[in-house]
Image 1: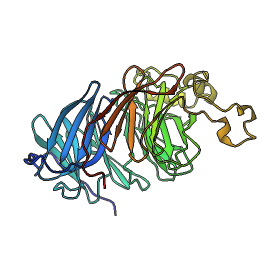
Image 2 (image 1 turned 180 degrees about the vertical axis):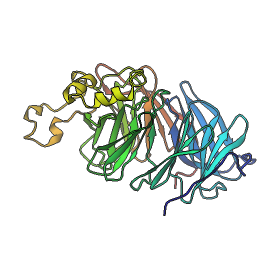
Image 3 (image 1 turned 180 degrees about the horizontal axis):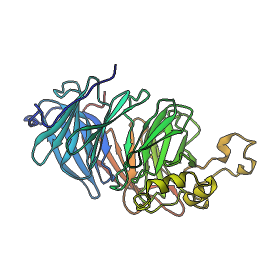
Image 4 (image 1 turned 30 degrees about the vertical axis):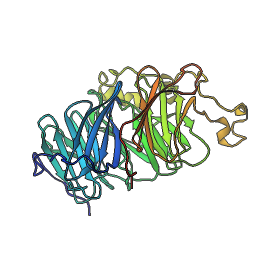
Length: 393
């Protein structure tokens, strides 16, 4: 039986009650970027905290006496947050989404479900709630339900949205193993991409939603797809051994891809995908877009893939491609940064050839990379933003 949501414009939560005693231990439950990687949110067993990345500083915090949040989803840098309760003693249930206005200090909407909420994604006109087998898409203005999407089991709450005002794209797991479903809501078009043989572990979209980067639970390869026609544009190799991928990020200019895993290394790859003007999607009618999809595939690929610059190193034995195992002809990472293997980290892009990294141990790193020569990244900052008295359970 599928969950039937119950939404209402205001709720019984009213105000979040502030914490009085500041001596209790703080447990970090989650970390997540905002949509442009300029800030991140930390959900704790006592509330939540918001941090700015450049320059690094705590923007604000809400410490509560009646529980914390396992999901804290920002909407760029505005005062609206989506909150879902979590932690051993939280009074906020894990099956309820609170839309919180921090300027007014009260709940402006809430959604209740029959099962645990796995993630929440926001854009300026949509609220997306992800359950293990179903995704609900709501209109932000009146909280009305617009779409329901069934997925394969999705305990990680995988889902991604485009964030340009002229595109409305959602990526989520499909109904088959290794499949990603792309919804182009503005074009009323669905595209199913068979990205991997194994289950999907992580994916991300470009801001305009026209490119998708994916990794599987095997964690060795990352693939980049055109979301309009499902064409695979590039494949890069993180490594040979199986790994759990924690994050994938694409730089705003779509020149670089960064990924973090349980191997303790952030890998940076050079992309050969050309940047299409962000207005091209908005200026194309649905008929023109459909015509593009039916063009000769080599022509459409030429428009999206730039000539190989050789930025990502590949094996000197690549001339024997098809004879030797596949990893000999793979594109390997262009630059790297090493971290403790015991802690999950998420990585994203800062300004001027920098990568920002946040860990579940309460640490923040900023490092720079050489865009010409690659190699080991240079650490610029290492800040302990949250003292963890007891690690994540």
